[in-house]
Length: 554
Image 1 (cartoon, helix red, strand yellow):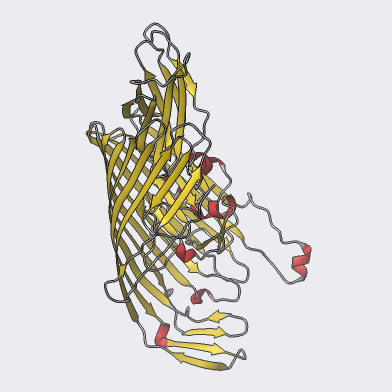
Image 2: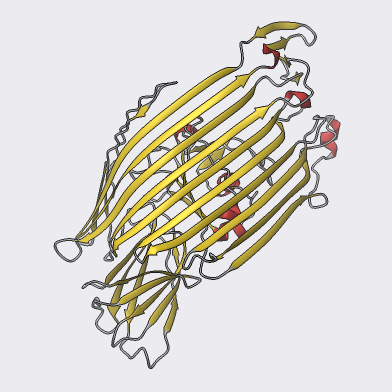
């Protein structure tokens, strides 16, 4: 049972001056759950929660030491179960973990393959048998549960490393949305990756793409000027998880539409390397140019000439930095394709790189530093039949992201986090060399010769400073729990865009050899934009009588 959700927003934007965006969203959700376990609310990180009981009496065991490791053995932290046998690990990155359970007078247990996902809770229930752990081997079990959202509001899809490596996809996040996320509709069809190199607009549940937002490791990387696009062009090899939230959001997420959350991979205590290669082209493709198409005058169909990708990743302990670990990823995609009735061969090249450092300043303080960047080159943007190669644009887009993350675990049930991020993109579309004539467009057919209608040079950046906390408390009696999420998000975004028409002239033809209209422009034109956002958010979660879950957000 859920109550209706209200979302009230007020925004003020001023072009060319400092702009202030103030939004107030009030949302109330109450869910009646017939379950007895302790559940933890939705957050911007993953959570492992659990309960330990005595095997014979089924009573909760206090003082069980629970230690969490990642699959490579790197220590995440250790906690003790409370008087009800409950334990908790907050602010965990997505991935697989192992838990160790020890208590005097009981056998030692290990639970492996505990999968953690962003914004979800992985619940581990275990019953310990009496015995001496030093006299008998450790009991090893594999976790059989799935990460869940206890509030029933996790609408969307989660793609992890298994999906990236095994699902048939065009090796980019937008192909996953097109083919695997049923509520999402992209603005172009990318069959096998033939549209690689373009940033896609996405409609979710029929809503506008301008209401969508992107987050990379919890920091907003949405384009401040061209809403619904990211300031990053991520490659799958650098991602640990890609999560799509299509409905209910935390108060920290200000976008009312879909939220696309990207999580980067991190290193471990063991050195690992990985190399991958992919190729598509002749003779690994067939042709659908049948006799009927030939009767209509077709001589070819859109197809790949060459499409190759190389990916290299390396991670492990950072040299000369003690307990620090690193992860780095490098990738290259190169596409050349054939477009019917287009006299050139369009090409696209994407160069991607990421490096991440993780370490502990103290046992309770964890620090992560990340730098990533991409370069996308397109030889003929908007190539299509009946258009001259000179009427296309040369694309050269750069993407850069720098982030720092600090996590302070005040206790096993209270976590403070600070995030600092800078994201920047420079989308540049220029006239090809050798263009000598202004744009000439046929009004009836859309055919073009001469130069492209418009070239542009842009620079867009976003600075983010986030402080947030998460605290979980046991209230009056058994079954009464309280969790509080709160934070502040300070952001400043800047954008400049310069537009230019070749020779400031555009000719529109109808019929084909007579200019019906001559348009004269006054370019270049320069647009500047600045946006400042100050956001405070608050989410409170109450669990009453082990059955009633109430959430309040502001």
